[in-house]
Structure formats: C-alpha cells, structure tokens
Length: 200
Image (cartoon, rainbow, N blue to C red; front, side, top):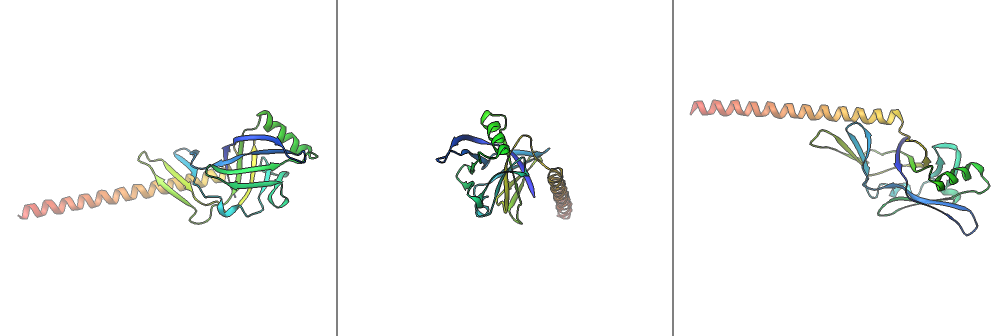
C-alpha cells in the first residue's frame, strides 16, 4: 500500500441534522503537483478515483486503524469525485472521545494535512522526463483506495520513496543509453557521409 501526503483543501466543520459533528473537504486535488523525491514529482489526474469509490473505504487518523473516524459501509464516510478532486464528508461520533479530539484539532487548525492509502494498478500511471532531467509521474488510476486520513506529519513511507528513487534511476539510465545510441548513430551516419563524399 502506498501513501501520499497532501494539504486538505476547503475543510469545513458543521453539525448534521442529528447533532453529529461533520468534517468535510478535499482529501486530494487533481493536477496539483507535489514532490516525492529529489527530481521527482507526482500529480493525480481527473478520474483517478472513479473505480475506487465503490469500495469500503475507511477514514482514519494518522493511518491508525485503531482510530476510525468513519467508514463507507457504515454510512459515516461519504466520498465523491468532482472536477476539483476527491471530496469527503466524515460524520464524527460524538461519543468517541478520540474522534472528537481529532475533530477539535482540525476545527482549530492544528491539523491541516491529509494522506490516503492506495495501490496503483498496472498501467495506472504515466511517466514523463522533462528537459531538465526531472521526472513527473501522473497517477491516472487509484485502485483500490483503502483509507483517507487527516494527518499531523507527511506520511511518506521510506519504501515508497525508495521505489520512486529506483524508478527515477532506471528512467535516467534508459535516457542516457538512448542518448548514447543516438550519438553512435549520428557518428556512424557522419562517417558514411564523409566516405561517400570522398568517393565522389
């Protein structure tokens, strides 16, 4: 499972009709570019969450499965995809002191980040090498989406960053090899042209 840390956008707090506290906002925004390693960035393409919205996603705090804020199957977490990104609404249990503590911290502005746990299926992302040698991944499909979490600190796992760094090294090695092959071909063509000119 991979994790990405993002800023929660347009987070609001309100009270539902039955008096329960509700936390709402965007857990991910499409096309925002964020850094995952030196020389490597990512963004999420519109439509990336479409296939994941039917799953039983959980809302956790700090990715801790012991602090469940909401769950799709319980009707306490609602997720939808808009033109902006992944929007979520969490109905907080007022009888759960841990959940209420998290709600209070978010309401006061002490917690402003979020993260989500997910997998990228084969073919679910594109990679582009820029002129400056940096690499950008565009995530086009998130499946499955396991959980969304308000978090205090970025939750990149070392293994995720290391995987991206390895991909980055592999990409740059392939680019360098392709450049060497182009230079060889250019040199070979130059020699052939020179030889042909001498013959004439």
